[in-house]
Image (cartoon, rainbow, N blue to C red; front, side):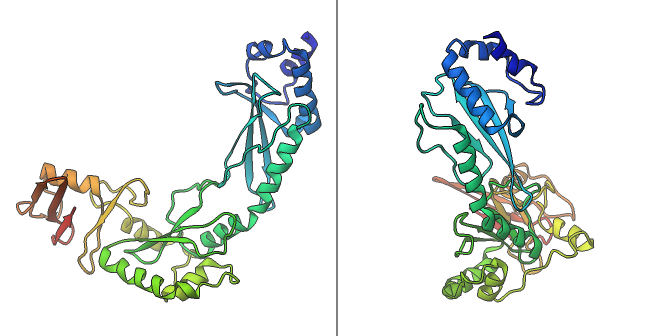
Length: 316
């Protein structure tokens, strides 16, 4: 038994974060289960896995990294339960779809099969990631970098005032995606109408999403070629809150817009309403005396001037 424990404690090539031997000691009282686990690991190859800190309900976590055809790195974590092999391992990944062990037979199932299934799933998602790579190449992506491989959405700039949020089906990346426009309502209304009128023209045989969208919306996306030029600074300023100066490209934070033509300044709703409540005069000598906050049953309507053009903004 001590010789079995020494395999874990002396093998420094596995990982620098090897779990404590106390957890393993509690597990190896069942020699048969422990030998079966060792057999599974040896079948995979010690060089293909690392041992990492186990979760609360497992005695050991195997960490495997797979490099796909696009040179993308994908991690698979296999949590080994204290009831191994009677209880199926639990898998964690950074994929855009769920990866689970569908069937598990304690006597015949092998961890090598789990890795092979993981590789197959990653390989099947290559068109999906290739599609996202094309988006990042052909358009200006506003999402905060780095973007996780599990993300199925991208926010693309259309112009200084409007951007589009696209959600792609990982298993059918050329299909019509879920689309949401963000910007002043008077501007995005036009895009919504064009999308509704022309969505039947979507061509799945033409896998390039940008070309499909340009055809349907009758627009040309700004390119990413000069993303490091001076225009980048202008784009960044246009996508920031006029009060806190942080990015407004955040799915969790609602953005409001000044609807005045040639302004369309953006604000975080929480920043703007907080500014109204405090009634603190801002830059450009904005007049804050006309601020009115109406509190009604179940609703709050905030009305006040844009800090830049001084025109009135009404937010429900």
